[in-house]
Amino acid sequence: MKYNRFEELPVWQAGIDLAAEIYAMTAKPEFKNRYSLRDKIERAGVSVSNNIAEGFERGTNQELLTFLYIARGSAGEVRSMLCLLQRIPGICDLESEISLLTPARSAAPGRVRRRRSGSRGVREAGPRSVAGARRGRRGGGG
Image (cartoon, rainbow, N blue to C red; front, side, top):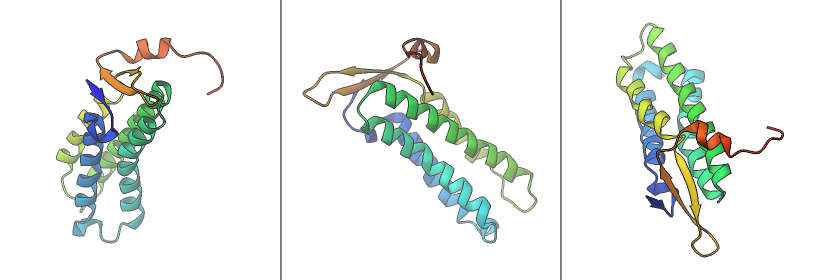
């Protein structure tokens, strides 16, 4: 499928849904006096969709793939924090919030290829393994 805007990407849509759910969760009274935890999980949640958008807007497949991996890392950070919050007495049940991370995490490292469409190009995502995408990388600093 071809994508002209990051808002069309299913993985971005899952990421923005995740951020909205995190903000809804942290608006609950249980988070009232937990400022640092609330701030940290909100920032990590927003980072998922923001990194996908940034990678897409950079215009190259390699940068998009790099930012998809960064977004996946942010999703892992959110999931880890949700697991911690479940162990803290007085925090609500977070099973549904944890399950939201599965689609965002699994969709992030998809196949991406560039098709010429004027000077900008259109990205296309499909089912290619992460290992296959990595084989195309050149050596060098990281």
